[in-house]
Amino acid sequence: MDKLPPKEKFFDFSDYSRPFSRLLVNFIKDSTISPLTFTSFSLICGVIASILIYLNQFKLLAGLLIILKSFFDAVDGELARARNRPSYVGRFYDSVADFFVNVSIFFALFMRFDESILRLISVIILFHLQGSIYNYYYVLKRHKAGGDKTSRINEKNISSIYPYDNPFWFKVFHRLYVWIYSWQDNLIHRVDKSVEKLSNIPNSFMTITSLLGLGTQLMIIAIMIVIRYERYIFDLFIYFYSLLGVVVVLIRKIFYNQK
Image (tube, rainbow, N blue to C red; front, top):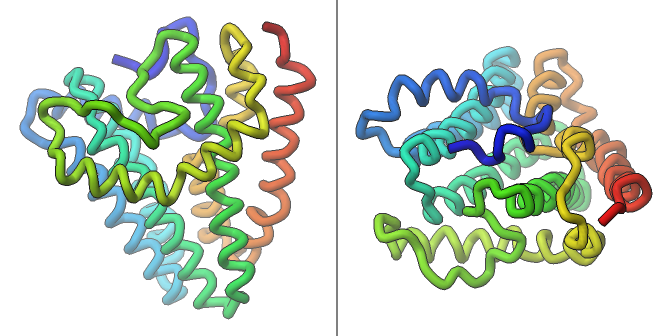
């Protein structure tokens, strides 16, 4: 099961590892390996990459680990859909793990370059807001186009979970998700609530918006580390990418406003 029906699929810059993840999923879908295992692999790769960034060692390996993190991040959901076993535990664990990896990368850069605490807080907030713009439109598209509906715009109230989801871990990861992300989702919703009136989210707009996706963000970070431009990562996401986020919302309101 894909996230979107075939005719609604778009070129997604942030989803570059999907073809490779499907190859692995086709090989292991009948095994007993849990999708959560790959979420944990994703978390481990990101943490190790952060340590290498702080130590200023093995830059190529650090960049490859960040890309591998994105690969495992695609495998977990792909495996769950291949087995037709969506999971709220997996959905929220995945997002919490992403947040932890992102913060660890920026904290490593903060420590290594002796950045100010204000810039650290700013880049963490803005980086996640940029990703939330992409997620907001992507979730809306999936709902409007008849795709996967495990994710929602408002994740605060989940009335029921799947029978195979562990209630304890659901509560833990759901509560963490709400603390971390709910204010972002609410803010982006307020900024462009009118998009809900559209019958669908155009594929061409989603391709533009995917420049803000976490996969794209992490790929850029990986490249900048490998080419030794990591000192400029804070500036890129505080200034340029924040401007890009504003431009994307304006593009939607100006050019994609037909109901």
